[in-house]
Image (cartoon, rainbow, N blue to C red; front, side, top):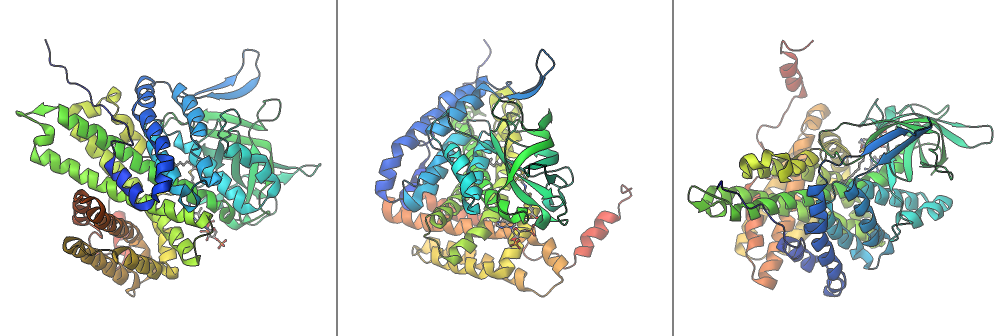
Length: 561
Ligand code: MFK
């Protein structure tokens, strides 16, 4: 009889996650935690049970685009997977979006919401994509002050009733530029009745099955660039169920996020309404981007946690060379390094969630708003890259089994790869962060770092804290050293990621002090120390001084045309 390996299992995602529970105990008032904990347990059970089983069974069920009906009518209907349909109903019922707007827990509502997203995300095949955009649309509409649109859409976007719940698309990307959105060519023109209609092609619309979208288009006669674009609201179908002046040309055939029906859409006179004036579209859609970037970060953490949970359980079941993998020092060290990254990402992302919560409860001052503005791109950029690295290592921890599609790990590796790409690539976000750091953001961050580290007393953590301060000194030197702007920009990625790592390390150290004081638990201190050892500000002494060097290096190869 051949040997059969028992597969990895998941326990309740909430009760089996000490780092999450520790963070929530530290950050939430005990009354808030007591009130929301049963919901977290329920989501943890769903994520480890029904939804995870569906995800494994549903593996090959991908979205389908039906363009024509039997009688030759163009219908362009998108059918999503069974898991996505179930996820939609559960997301509404559990208030995955609503939680943030009901504000039951005041300024803590965003953190509670993010804990829910974290428990929901890894078993639902990136259904968090439409949810993130829905949350972002609600935020952007509220910020716009457009009362008619708020009244029309917000009750749907924030509904807990699956029948009334709407998701929203965020249609920005055009083939001319996914990052350089200002090059968009979609035209907005008023018809004879004065209604706005859109004409153009949106190239990566991630929620083709959504009921509404926020999109950018250039009102006829407006100047080029992001400033000449306007933010528009549209509903995808008219009252009789037909598409609102658009065609879905095809669904994308992607490396990962294969359950997400990402479409190319032709706008052929789509009725739309301006959300906030007829220009500055990029500025007006930015609140949506900031929310989806924060979601991106928590989804990155959730995927890392899933991979590590599976790898740890597997390591306890699998034996090689006469011992279980978990008992083998090098394997244990390898998994501990992943666990450390995941904890740092969790703390950084939840800190961003807390800042959003404070801002929305009008409990944040100017400085905290600015801090949030800097830390959002930093957290998104760092966690996306961590997820790719961690999940690649998770696959290796399974050996050949991790390379097999129906083992459940390959899916995580493929899905993680989108996280650094959509919602702003690492370089776009690093340059965004660089601009903000130069504009007073760095000194604010440094001050906040001082507050965070100010709580630390234990000698081992004081040593950790000194290394974090030293990393920030090096970043400060790097930011302020006189050099050409091009050389500074060439260094932006290292600076942004270094700030993310340094701030995450500080949050881990503060949590470790809290855990020592409250739980006599030393594992958070190990995580803080290891996170610092795994690197805060890489290649400190070889920063590029001259951006021309990279260009010369790349240009010298015979492979260039
Ligand atoms: C799993 C969970 C996540 C799921 C997500 C779902 C998937 C979604 C699919 C997608 O839609 S992916 C597409 C996402 N696309 C991007 O993220 C675009 C990336 N590119 C950038 O972010 C560029 O930097 C940017 C488009 C903003 C550059 O455009 P511009 O026209 O050069 O804008 P500019 O001049 O930098 O900024 C214009 C205004 O917006 C400025 O304000 P003012 O008009 O007052 O000067 C900026 O300060 C402001 N702004 C830009 N980014 C901002 C912002 N304000 C607040 N927050 C921001 N992040």
